[in-house]
Image (cartoon, rainbow, N blue to C red; front, side):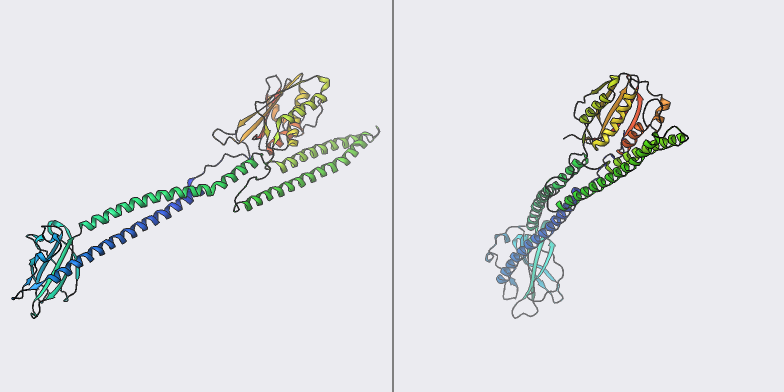
Length: 482
């Protein structure tokens, strides 16, 4: 059963979540920052290692240049024992030197002299014209397919203008590449751990930052469930102005509603007074030729009173229905009405019983409106009952799977009277219709109950009663107990 004014809570999509948006933006920014930081740091480390490696190799080239000598025929000579690094003597150690003879066109004989570490191989270098003393840097493939960093320069023998020699030193790059790879791996792992920690920090920040919104949501739910007339609680400075403005709107709305209700009541009472005067004058009219006029006046006064009662009840409920903070306990209202009915129908000795609910029940509306609806139902049941009237109330969940705070208040009033045929039940709810003119009334009782219940988003149903008469089932929105 669905009730007007209490729709099911809409599903919250992830892309509409403020928490998800903040976390997504934060994590995306942090991830991009970590990626850029990783690339920059890895590049800087690689460049630093490369520069250090090249600087060390430059020292080796300078040492070879310093140890280079020429014999009487102008041929280069380098004493191996004059070199300090033992890797020059170990085959394929990863550190190599070589002397090439250079022709004026840049070509020449390779491997005129070479280190013992080259063993039976020589370094194949590209043709690269060099100015005397200039140093060039290359990367080539050396012995056993190892990548090498090569530094080369040209020198001339004194007094021999045509003879030019290329001095070459090379070192294996695998050591630096392995060091760079290890650093990159450690850096990637460290940045991944940092990303996880920053993500956890962002989640904690968003959770703590949005926590006041949860308190605000609970405050709004308290107002909606009639547990509080306004938003109550302590909120951050950024949210408090919104809370104050919302409470101000609630207060102004209540004042407007109260003024409208007062004006409607004043208008109704202002009309009832002259109508009472007209009715009394018509009743006092002597039985003369004006009898027809007196009868007509009494009938029209009764019709006017019906309309005033009808519209007064509608205007009062229409102004107050669904106002936040409304909450009326059911039990005191029912007990008060039963006491009144026992007095009004004392001469009939009716047994009016109440089935006590298992838990306290509350109506999400004003006490006056609840008294109006239950009073009409009890009065109608007592008028038609032979000896017994039963009243029972219970709470029901609005819809399966919907928030349990949205509940219905279901009140049943039944009697052991003659009841109403199924064909006449709809007619009994029409305004001003009286199925039996011998029973006093205006024909507005059940119609007013149905109309007031509809304004609150509820309904009134008429069914056969277990006692044999009529059962009136009144469904209204329920307020949650504290």
